[in-house]
Amino acid sequence: MTDDVLTQAFVYLCAAVVFVPIAKRLGLGAVLGYLLAGVFIGPYALGLVGTEGHHVMHFAEFGVVMMLFLVGLELRPALLWQLRRPILGLGGAQVVGTIALVGGAAMALGVAPKPALAIGMVLAMSSTAIVLSTLSERGLLKTSGGQASFSILLFQDIAVIPILAVFPLLAASGATTAVSQGEGRPGWLTALLVIGSVSGVVLSGRFIIRPMFQFLAAVKLRESFTAAALLLVVGIALLMQVVGLSPALGTFLAGVVLADSEYRHELESDIEPFKGLLLGLFFISVGAQIDFALIVDAPATIAGIVAGTMALKLVVLYAAARLFRLSRAARWLVAVGLAQIGEFAFVLLSFGLQNRIFTDAIASPLVAAVAISMVLTPLLFVALERWILPAVTDTEPARPHDTIEHADTPVVIAGYGRFGQIVGRILRANRIPCTVLDLDPEMVDILGRLGIKVYYGDASRLDLLRAAGCDRAKLFVLAVDDRAECTRIAEEVRKHFPHLLILSRARDRPHYFDLRRLGVASVHRETFASAYEMGIEALRKLGYRNHTAHRLARRWRDHEEREMEELAQLQTADRATYLDRMRRALDEAERLMRDEDPVVYEERDAAWDNESLRADQHPDAAAQNPVSPDETA
Image 1: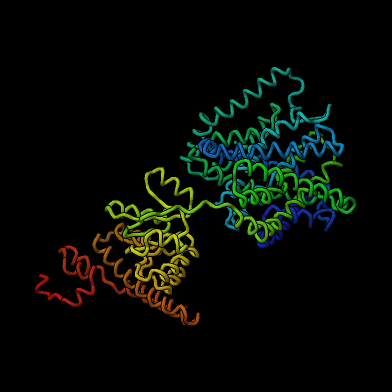
Image 2: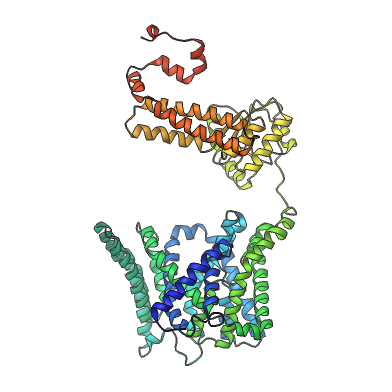
């Protein structure tokens, strides 16, 4: 334990560099890594830091101010309006319900009303960092439950602002609060200063800050822009502190005002490193101050706080999700995923101690409970995926498949998303009728309102394929996004409708090979055509004639398609043989393009050589009917 600044900085940075990457690799998240780092170097482990952590905490809390500025930058008015129903509805129900239940439970245990209300506000928060990263890693963020979780977390981020404003009002009588700067001023003057300061922040964002950043951007001096961004955050925080408001409130308002600014991304990139570093320092300080002696002395109390809080939050979250008619799987994802207490509870607990809303005897077990609940979150997600979601998914009442009567079209399309729609629109534009199947009920409803008939159903079901007219159709377009589902449908169609020509979408090379092994004759990689067109455009921009660029690219494409067919035949061979053939294919493609002489094409294109154009388009026909040089001339 030392008071030397450089030694302290070295200890904190070493702990962060060691523990955070390990925690990330274990799937625990960066926040838990910082907390564990603080525990390790704290007075109850190695003892490398101790009482000086309180001073570090005051400095590190500025990272919270920066974080709220960045939250404001993300909350554009248009985005808030678009998500207003799930944010205000689900998020509001969760926060208000949790505050009521947890606060009531605290009062039932003998806590005074004001501290009990503050405890409810503290424990209502969930961990944005842990939940969003876990949902993204497990591919659950785009599900209905994932989107509902995001809306609740967004509301919690916004709710922090009024909570911070309310906390000083809950302070014990005679306590020094955040509005102490206003002592000695009449009440009407303080109110006038607050209104004027908030109005000044909003107006300055419109008429002063934007022109200032425009001038600095024209100077093109990066450090000046970074300094101005820090000056903005520090200056607004200082202004709010002087007039007796939370600095976080002012910086949040400034972020919202600048959310539509053309310099928003530049501000984010300049502030983000400072925010991350200071927040990391803040969490290390929190971890260092966890009282493990208290956990050992009162394990039942802390375990009761953790279990009771998470159980109450789970009930509130499940009830809110059910009220808003989410599916059972989505309800459980929201309830279990957000049951923990979030990292912002540390901020509110620290703020509550500063304002003397509650004592160390109340705050210390709460700090330990918050950290323990966050540690339990990855384990809860494992339990959710292994046992809870499989148990509720199959019992979910599914929408019945649409009835298809008298389907007699030459084309059946399975999957009408961003890929299948293009194929369908081209066919419809040429008056070719199609029977379209899709398993996304929202997409079916939207297209129905646009006048496009799409049948809801699982295209891997034989009865639905027969009802769609696959017995009589000529072409089956397989445009399903999910790779496993696409392969399963192709197998079913090939087995029961061998006469039907399948045009299939493939996500990548391995998927291409899987479909070719099933006997699908025409497989199209979903990004290949657009990348191929961009390659042609790149040649044109570099000065090649239009026809020359197309011919060079076509030559490469023919080679690529031949190699893909050969590689598809080698999928059953050993891996060494396959990789060796792939390396040779890449070398041959590069050699082919190096040996190609574009000058020949340039001279030929200048004379509009129709026969060679025809040969390029139909090489087999050209081989059967060779044209002499005299005929070409």
